[in-house]
Amino acid sequence: MDAGRDTRTSGRLVWASADALESLGEPPDGLELEPIPDDPGAAERLGEVQFVVMPSRTPSGDPTGVFAGLWDRMPSLRYVQVLSAGVDWIVRDVPPGVGLCSARGAHDVPVSEWVLAAVLAGLKRVGRFCDEMREGNWAPEDLPELCGANVVLLGYGSIGRAVERLLEPFGPRSISRIARHARAGVDTLDTLGDALPLADVVIVLLPLTDETRGIVDAGFLASMRPGALLVNAARGGLVDSEALSEALHSGRISAVLDVTDPEPLPSDDPLWHAPGLLITPHVAGASARLMERVMSLVRAQLERFARDEPLLNVVREGY
Image (cartoon, rainbow, N blue to C red; front, top):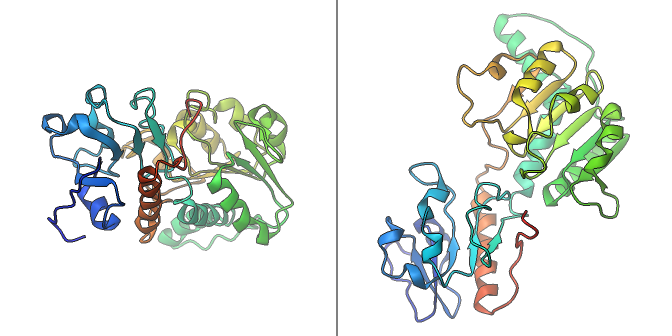
């Protein structure tokens, strides 16, 4: 789509960021695409909007702020589509009766690749060896193997399945799947007490909800076997940072985190100096091809909406 080109047609109104409109191209028949105004509250057509594609970022850093206090002034709104796999940051804002859709599936490749890299880096002590290298120290040690390890996947959606596919060729002894809802081959959170003491690697992929906030607490960490590795690629709020810092300083476990609470992690936070910890700055889902996948999903969603077909990834049961 050429910058500045008028995309209006006689159809149902969809708002999206200017960047998204560039990627989406021509609107499906029956839809009218417009960029989200700089001041949506002052827009004459606010009450006509039926579909909003939320921006991934804004100058303030908070995409929810774009529509703060405006949802009740959008009586025609039917769907809100986000570009993230998680919806914890917006689920409470979307009004009842409005469908909220995630970008589940679009992030599977980069996040699962990060998890695999994190598991191998954690087991092979890459963070420690980088520190030793900078000090000019030659400090070898025997290292754990992923082959023969017991792995717990805590959270088993599309990313969990993608992670499992990448782990399997390395020959782990077992991969236990634990999630909020039981289904074939997947246990509930009630089984954590049995799984954690046996796990060599625990990979956290849960959504952040009232039920899961702080689930990785002192009791959880104390249940992990000595020498186990914790990997968090989900949300920082799932982990009690103080309890994790204490567990790391005790030397019982090691960890690799892509997410923290808060973010960015303050420069004086004790986690920066915790032994056995490797931190990346919430980049697991970041890749050069991510937006291509996300926009392909959004385009499919708009086509479904134009045809009055059910949308994909609709968040249900309060997330």
